[in-house]
Image (cartoon, rainbow, N blue to C red):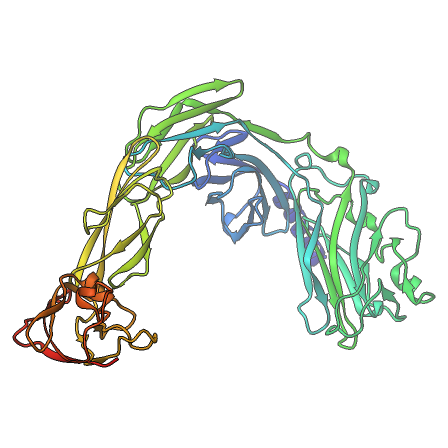
Length: 578
């Protein structure tokens, strides 16, 4: 008898103790029903527990659901600090389970200030500019809106494999948006529980659902008769089959999945009877974590889960939650090199801000536009302005004179051009000029390009080109036959450098040809004259050829490569045969 009384006392103690606490949630230090704050800002929240019985916080499990798929759970976790990286609205749900198993819930809303979309924030050019040119930066800001989107299901991007060699599937959907502390009082408010799946043997599967107060029911138990769910592919290496939707409702079309499997090869899509009565879920809170678990007990068959979810009576949801942020043009700021004063013009619920900027350094200059929303959050965006030095290329990049060089401008912003080629006062105003170097010696020449933008901004760049001159060595033939047969009719002084003429290799020449009596019969005073050669007539007059015999020459040259030949060292003779 004493033992019975002791048990009764313990039960009464349990009932009295566990039923005597209530739960609320508040923000610290300033509590409000809806907290307006900014992204990446620490938010302090704490549980407020009122009790007239026995409540030991250190033995109570506190689970905080933050509304962004994150949660923290720990014994005695009465206070947390959390921050959100993204703008928008979030429900915070707190679940407390005391040492006697009593469960209480509390909930608050947090609104993280929205940013404008910055779609019309831009620079007036998308090309590099001249150093010290001015650009116009602009931003158009509209109010930003957010609304809560209710989600009652999980859809897998890649279907989740259900097989005995995989972990038991268990995943939750957390609801926040039902009226606070609403429970299932009418089982018809639970319109359906559904899965989308394929599996090769239904008897292998057990499917359970647990509601936020830990009440759990079996929707489908392990069976005896095998039937297919959907259209499975037996070999998982081949691919994934086709899912059917199976639902459990209070108004089913079919019996339990196990009962129907006894007479069907494939279980059709539709509404089925739960293995355990759905009325077991009466009293379950709607807000909180609903967990679906699926266990496969055999390795010979498998399948895939594509999605699952729950449908509740939509009238149980709170009115739509939405909020907007506006932006104060008086809080606008621009930062970056050479920024002027902004002009801010209102246009209804939006405004436009423009500012002039003059970057002065080559490369990317970062400009930042910032504005505050009505929550006091700073919203900013950045853009780069590229300042480019003039530039050009040339082809070929050097070589032997005379050489034609093609210059190519690659300065996007340049509109007019001044080229100085560093040789013979060479100048051009073309964008892509061509210039010929006729160097007298091996020399490095400085090419200077001065460019002007459309606004008149001026900038310069220089590069060097190395031009060489060919070897000035020459060949002096000692025989020629001026008989008009077209073969060796002219005595030519020939450069040893290939594909060159005398004027290409010599800057000066004085060549004199004498007969045996010492009388001058021909003379070349320039490389161009010498290039034409001696045709065998006196002074190249074309009238009357000189007599056959031996003729003597003296030659003095000055090569473009710096070599010089004097006549005292360069003498020779020529045999004339006709």
